[in-house]
View 1 (cartoon, helix red, strand yellow):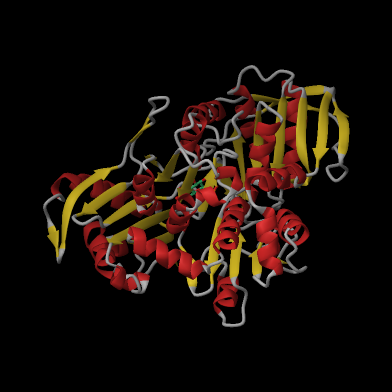
View 2 (tube, protein in one colour):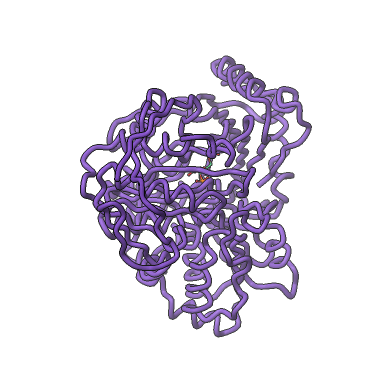
Length: 542
Ligand code: G16
């Protein structure tokens, strides 16, 4: 019933910021997915007889890899696999299932916000028993194993019917095909004031969610339309499709522009939100107000006690280093801990487990809390709806009042995608070399206060992560940060993060790019970004 298949290593299976992401044809190479899955199992200990959760965002190749993973889990000795019906599980829903049913871990098949389809992206990531992405020591072990793997084990049996809810036997292992939505909805009902949101919607507040043809469709329809009473059709592009219906499921001002334009039109909805391929990212837009992810984190934290699940207050806030310091000011005022981590949700896991942080966020449209161990797109949308329903103010008023109280962190990220890898690495190397010479230098009105390559000392387990992004800090709280993305699949993506703190409320109405223009120019001067990338403008500005 089980067979051992001889294989040979692929050299390129190093997990990035969030698991292994490659083009579908790469994953379709002989034994490519099998090697990586076996390397995951070979890097773990003590899972015999235990439960594994498996699901994905429904993208092209999802079902095929799920069948492989099920048969390999059986051959490796797992006792049970819980798999979402149709192979569907959003990343936060998978995290919830792992925690709720005390599974040993989970395999989530997704390339997140990257496009899907036969020539687009696919990905595999492993989550540990706390429901969060595997920490670096595990991903490093998985990579090391991929470099020497020579066999994998698989059950030689027929495929499971992924569309039928129920319990099945697969070569002696139990497979439970579960409703992917139900447990997640129960959790959201516990955290948020559904009656208040429902009443607000019934009173005429118009909300739309764009699921972008990706995984959140069924979750959003169930919650927004069925539980909260929004009219049918309030969730757009709600059927998860293998190619996301041609959408690029990256909720930002470029890829969710239709939604943005609709909310901004005078007769459009009052509030709009979008999420990504696997449902962990979110974008929120109020009438005349795009809420930056960094501001969203700060505002959710400042208003957290309005949601029943957080009524007792929050223990601390964590943000990734490139995320703006808006949340720091909230933490300061609340007198709670503030943690600055490298990019990657996995770095929040220890802080959440240790009870040091309750709410976490990243500039890359990610917000979440200790309810799961992943960022959670719909959670953030519901948090906003809860705040809007209780305060009975517009998003515009809530954001501008927040700035008036705390000051505004003007913030923008410029992405240069698919840049030649050597050119991108050359830029980073040159920047590193000049770091020690920057402090004290003046660029126009801006004086460099400090410059470094960010390193993180995890306060819980003492692990150290170096080279996490180059920071140039100016006097007065402005800064520019340079990083290479760890989630792209072709060439290199250079990210430039720009931030300026403006305490004066009379200067809060400036257009963002204009408010940051001097910093953007200095960033180019210091890094030679345009010259080295061969581009005269970013691919995406958020
Ligand atoms: C992943 C990580 C996030 C990270 C984002 C961008 O998100 O989980 O923590 O902020 O990638 O990373 P990078 O700047 O390295 O591309 P997702 O939604 O893609 O899983």
